[in-house]
Image 1: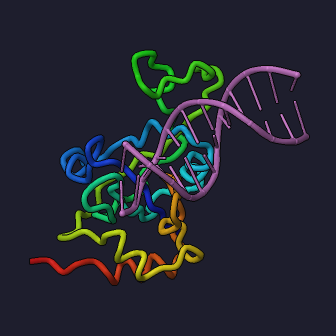
Image 2 (image 1 turned 90 degrees about the vertical axis):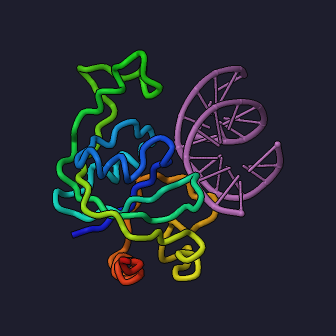
Length: 153
DNA sequence: GCCAACGTTGGC
DNA sequence: GCCAACGTTGGC
C-alpha cells in the first residue's frame, strides 16, 4: 500500500469542501507527472490533503482512493479553465482519481514543521520550488507524519 | 534535436 | 510582488 499527498488551494477547494461532499473527483490536473502518479494509485490507499498557497500551508487531513482512471470531463468542456483542445472523447488525454474524505485533523501540520522533520531528499514536498501537485509519500515519511497529527481538543 | 522564451506553481 | 523550479512551446 502506497501513500500519497495531493495539494489544493483552499480558496479553490478545501478540506472543508471535501468534508461536506464526502466524495470528490480530483479533476483539472494538467501535469503528466501528477496524472501518472494518480494512475498508479490503488483503491483504499491513503492520501494526505495539503493546503497550498494558504496561511498557513500544510497537511490538514486524510483522504482515501476510491477509483482511478476516471476520464476527466473538464478536458472536453469549452467553458472550463481546464479545457484541452488537444484532447478528444475518442482519445482522452487526462484521467483522474475519485477520493473520499477520511478525516480532518484537529490542527494543521504546517510546512515549517515538515521542513524541520524531513529533508528534501527523503520527501520532495519540502524541496524548494517543488510544483508537483500529486506526489508519493515514502512509507517511513508517512509513518512519521501520522505520529505528528495534533491531538484533538 | 536544441534551446530560448514563456507560463505555471507555490513559498515567502 | 518577487523569485525559484521546471514544464511546454515553437523557431530553426
